[in-house]
Length: 205
Image (cartoon, rainbow, N blue to C red):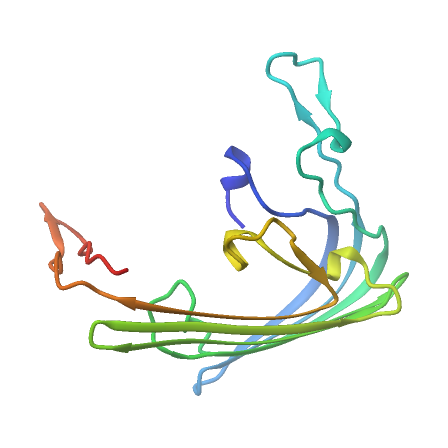
């Protein structure tokens, strides 16, 4: 997701995946975008080993780490993915207003089979100084033996503030979030620094 895990704490699980695939993307004038992928993959577990700076010859093994990496089923499989989106910038990091829609499918066949369906809808509306943003997501994994690397995991500040990492894990999930923001009528002007123009601070609780 970024270089942050290299320099500090992170809240992700990792899987050692070798994958080769072909991807096709299209975008229509109506704002719909499609993504299709076909390929083959092999998953293996990732070991976590932390070297002590005080004693470089000592290695902290995964079983002694403060947060363990979720184990994965070590399998090889053929993979197919399909995704349909409309207005993907709405409700995300972008400030673009509107309503977005996302439908996704992932299917695997081989040493282990699973099918994963997801749907989501982000929203961002602005009325004067008021901004309303929200997001709803749901998904389900269908499999006789669902691999951990295909499960849904919710927790931490990104998904559920106030809950521990991986507080909720399972083969189906639904999550709705909404936020209301009011931009205060102070510090509205951009900040000029020579030829550089910085955005206005515009505090917005």
